[in-house]
Amino acid sequence: AQTVTQSQPEMSVQEAETVTLSCTYDTSESNYYLFWYKQPPSRQMILVIRQEAYKQQNATENRFSVNFQKAAKSFSLKISDSQLGDTAMYFCAFSSRAGAGSYQLTFGKGTKLSVIP
Amino acid sequence: DTAVSQTPKYLVTQMGNDKSIKCEQNLGHDTMYWYKQDSKKFLKIMFSYNNKELIINETVPNRFSPKSPDKAHLNLHINSLELGDSAVYFCASSRGTAALEAFFGQGTRLTVV
Image (cartoon, rainbow over all chains, first blue to last red; front, side, top):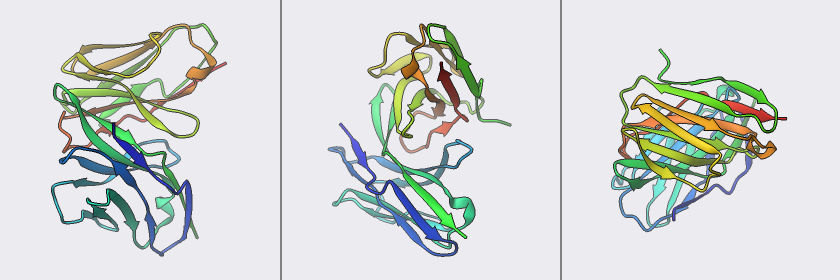
């Protein structure tokens, strides 16, 4: 079974600074996908960034980038130039096949990020 | 144009009641899901349907019954509600491949009193 571990329950960062959120996972699969989702106080789950395991290049989306270390099963999220709107819960997620064309996401327990003005 | 919509957004009900949460997606996705987020924000999958067929049925009390009348809809019916059922329930959909992310509804906060 896949597991996803986020070891930082809470973090804070000054506005305009950079912060890195950690995520490790455990799987026996060789091809899989990893995601970071953001959940602001509005409760909406929003995809931040996606990484395919077969790609060595780290994914980037504007101020968000990942450090994907496949051998170490590590998938950290770096947020540059932090903004107040980045305040949210951040969930790391692993996508695995559940059968018959269906996939399921296994989530970590989340990291609550506060951006301080 | 909401991609995945759930109704209601908030639901307060008494123990023992039966309630339903509706979900609709207009993305043309084949797969729909129900996730439960507990008070500690932990998200766990409950059910998955692919083309109206039940694929995933995690260890969920049989008081919870999903129903998928068509590919675009996946409703969740809960019988004999208990205090422990209080949570936020998310509907999501995806195109059925791991490469594509799941799109989530806004969640339904269920409070059982």
